[in-house]
Image (tube, rainbow, N blue to C red; front, side, top):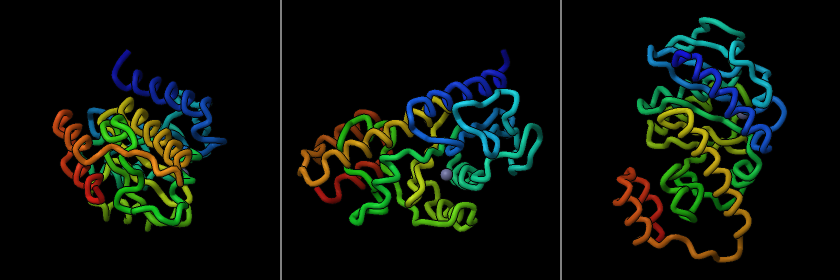
Amino acid sequence: MGTEARLREAICRFGRSLFERGLTAGSSGNISARLEDGSWLATPTNSSLGFLDPAGLSRLDRHGRLLSGGPPTKELPLHAALYETSAAAGAIVHLHSTHSVAVSMLPDVNPADVLPPLTAYYLMRVGRTALVPYYRPGDPAVADAIRGLAGRYSAVLLANHGPVVAGKDLEAAVYATEELEETAKLHLLLRGANPRLLSPAQVRDLAAHFALDPAIAEAHCEKG
Ligand SMILES: [Zn+2]
């Protein structure tokens, strides 16, 4: 099986897994992945991640013009904006996952660093997450807001909507989105409980050991 065929299968398999675990409901959520020639695959509009067909995925050229398959998700501009600003992004996952959406509505969220350093894997897989204000679905301003982050974040949380997460490949993007959702769940479970976060020394140790983006350690050590 060629690279494109394998990637089509993988998008459908990960989509079904995310859907079946309740990480995005109905026809919400979408996935895209870059191919080696610069074109990309995306889930079609009005499709459920639980019931994707490898042959039915939309294939787009590097400018987002449809090459084959059905029309792509209406949320394609979110993906395009993140690819544009992040050269390392090979795939993007967007979900309406409950706990992440809930965190996006809390009154005391820091838009530059939505979640505190609760676990090592959050720092390693996600790093830090930016909050983008609420926009009406389809409003091109949301893509501009993502562009405004200028590639400094691979994970963006859209207020009252859901996360958009890039990874070097499809597996990395899916795992990072899951880690973000689990960390959001922990954050809500521990709200008001004064949890023991990773200390600045522990955060710096992780950043050094796993060669994380220095901005991740900076973001999480500011308050410490
Ligand atoms: Zn959405």
